[in-house]
Image 1 (tube, rainbow over the protein chains, first blue to last red):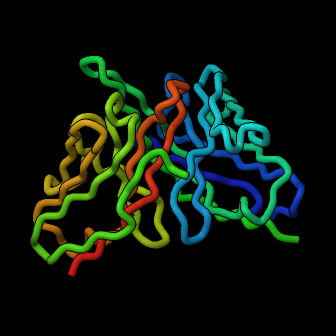
Image 2 (image 1 turned 30 degrees about the vertical axis):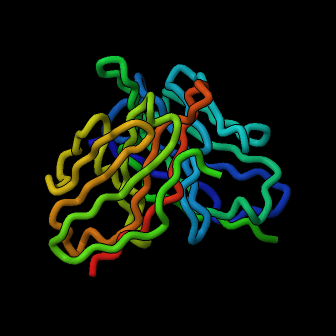
Length: 124
Length: 109
């Protein structure tokens, strides 16, 4: 079955750029949407954005000015860059497959599977 | 602030039935999906679409929707169901954004 694994630095300095990669194994990255989601310690889930395998993207408006998500289909990977980070960006970052369907005219989307998550701390 | 509203905490007696709700305007147009998250673990999908369970999710979990409210029902709650539950759907802007509810902490007594 498809598995996702996040990788990247666990510590980032304030004002710098957070960079993470999600590697997809057990299946192709093609024909799906792929999302990044984060969870600050003790808080709820926040959707960051998605990328389609073709490269089209959509971002959370609250983060849009600082976020870039890209895809490398040859490596079966997609990546997140978040610029000008502050302590408020400290969180567990998850990648997930984002599936969309329409049944009888009603759209549904869901995230499955998820990566295990990686904690990124913003601190000097 | 989230466009999907959940009660912060709900409790249920062992073996009883509990309903966790999620409210939002977008739920009039889109189905919600539901996730279970235990401490230190990644969220796990438990319900998607109208009322679909991924493989491996017990049939005591079910989903429903009415108007602007989506519900996750656990029939015969077990101790292992104690967790945080999050709903997810699209936002109401029409821009294909995703949004999560604030989460509900379920305690099994």
